[in-house]
Length: 504
Image 1 (cartoon, rainbow, N blue to C red):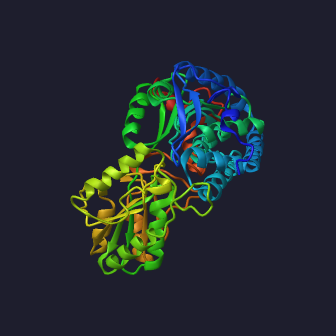
Image 2 (cartoon, rainbow, N blue to C red):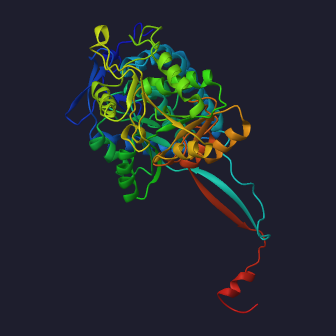
Image 3 (cartoon, rainbow, N blue to C red):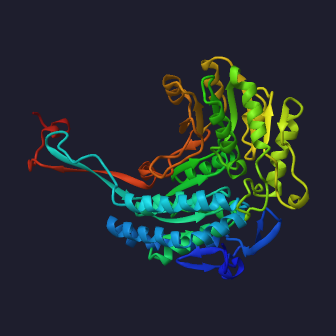
């Protein structure tokens, strides 16, 4: 895997992909892509500046008439070819994703890459199914119908936790609907976003439809969001940065889609399958080293199961294997950076003053000392209003709290500013059904936590943002709905004209 794939050679021309070609940034500042498992630099490139954003937006604007004017079948066929190219290059994508993120290779090969190929195939089909209300004579004298039209140049910003999947989530619905796009990936993880755009070109998607600018948020990101020729912004990242994006976008009356932070509750009722809940909690908390905005972060366990749950989760966490991301047996890789590892460790260290660290709570030494590793961590005994319960940690840390009544469990689940995802664990259909209705989150799983599918939407409530990624619901973000109305009477003077002049 990765045999023959050399990052410096592949991206020797630079980390900006504009108008179908790689080029170097013009900010005058360089940036290193670092393998967080070793601390080694794997690629150095010139960051994008405002001029690169301008060039990318111009390329997207030039490509828009042709791409939006293509038939849905033509766009669909190009995107089916795109999915095939991605599948052919799956090993290279998995290698690059693990290299820049520290993801275990089994996660990249079994989750990130196939999920992206599937998402591309889904939107290739969805490109032919833009739906609207049926044409009809709703007032008797006119025929009305709805057109869905592409909105123009989209400027999107993606995070570093799932660089390939997030690039796909931003790009695919936009281009399937006939838009063109400029994507700014996180500057620390640009490799697979660039490869994604290159694969689109190989598949025959026209130059300028998909552009990548890799730069810092203050320089490239803010300029992209505020650009007068960008008509819509989609952002995935922290709630704090999302607020800044919203300020810039609304100043120019742009359409806005925000997928922000999360603090997903994991609610275990006393009739739940304990073994399933324990396994689900560990998997849901530790996927991608906990760097997932839908990760299980707050386990609320009804008191009869609480002690056994704590013991079971702690025991299972202690079997999780930290190691080289490219070793197929590695379960947990490093965090994205030493700075992020230290941030996570800070939450846990501060929590020791008011809670108990049941297991974990430390960085490993030995062969892993140079990487940004942190052991799977379970914290118990924290108060509901404590920092570790209320704030997004974004690391391999699960906090567990007891509850007594169903009312209390659901109330606690809703008691944070966030509302992206949640899960409820119960064998009782009515109990689980109540949880799905009353927990305020964009996705509520029952007896599982984490799975996503291309056909279903992803997006949040409350401080977790608004709008949807994936599924046909995402087209609501990327299309303009136009009402067209034809007069059917051929009468020059309509009855309603009397409200302006004359009598009946």
